[in-house]
Image 1 (cartoon, rainbow, N blue to C red):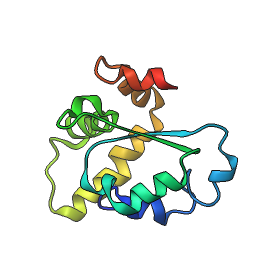
Image 2: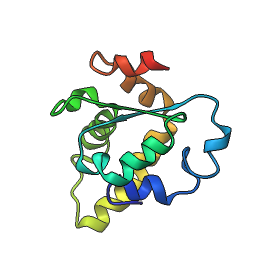
Image 3: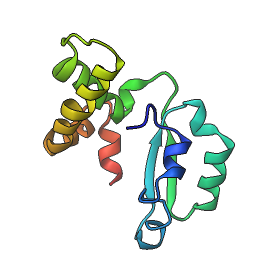
Image 4: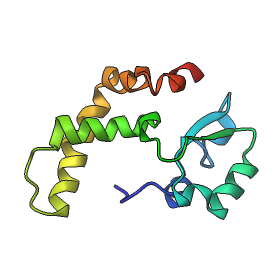
Length: 129
């Protein structure tokens, strides 16, 4: 599991929706909601977005407004309802709990994930599809 999401993940994974295998089979543009992390504005990302303009639409969320980011709802769920009160021994323990239980169980719970897009501050994202 990568330590953080960034340009290296977008470009390094051939199975990614915009990777070599995915670009040819997409029937409509992939919509990406991005915060203002510095790597989202990197030259590598900007060049990639420009090169795949017909397959990709990037929309930036307002700065310092995590409530509008559906990803933040995932982390809120994990932190408050899955592992937040469990004592962690070290970083390896945290990583193991995140990947082997919290995120995997949330991934299996489609209703919870969909519900993150129906909150008042994230409803706009559900309306895009």
